[in-house]
Length: 250
Ligand code: NDP
Ligand code: 8X3
Image (cartoon, rainbow, N blue to C red; front, side, top):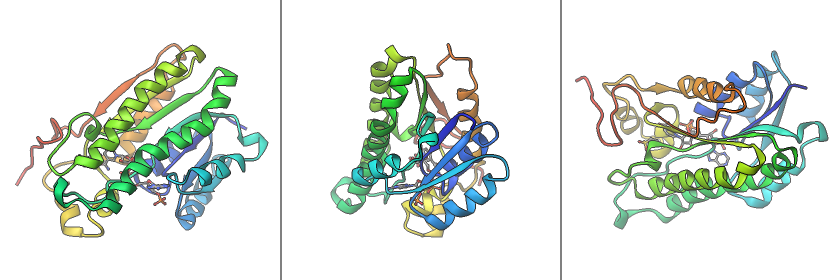
């Protein structure tokens, strides 16, 4: 068995690309709620490596613990944890926000990341070894209008990442925050609840980042020698300069 990587949100977009990139030199645990997608990805990855599928909702702490406890013994020593699962749900001014959307974002993006880390990190501490890579967002560095709660969830991820790095520092565990700008995935279709027009407009007139760009960054981070931690990385498409400044060709 190769070193084990555990990737949340592997059924789509950035997580799927990370699982594919890591499969070259890791055994991978792939996670997500959609079982058919997990199965399809597992069949593809099994051509290159050992794969274990875990279907659970990261926002359900009991389900997170049950899933991780269900791992066979030989899969329990996870060396690389990629906390990627998450989404934006809606985009609205604060006085019109939808409470169910708010709960989904805080519960999955922030609490889910914490639940998974709480379940996996003790064995890293015991072994004094491991990498934890949290996929934050530029939305966790700069707020933007109508991004309120999504931004708050990602600011939370940034704070939690920096806190984890301190707490795990005595054990030689590397903790990394990767904060992408606009990446073309299913993200905007989820955010805008299947509205293709709104979703496409997010990437109109630019060459966005692609999931593979983030996966290559993750691979680069992991492949640094053990004394090097790339603690905090913001990655934009070249057309983007900040959360609110994007140069679009008309
Ligand atoms: P996608 O919608 O393509 O993928 C989201 C993934 O997260 C899916 O695999 C989904 O799996 C999983 N997921 C969402 N909620 C849950 C949950 N409650 N429990 C388990 N899994 C969940 O979007 P991206 O790939 O773009 O997003 C991945 C991460 O990157 C997110 O954290 C997002 O905030 C972040 N990000 C994205 C950017 C972008 O522009 N696309 C920019 C910056 C950050 P399933 O539905 O099967 O459970
Ligand atoms: C996703 C990037 O700018 O849509 O985290 O919030 S943005």
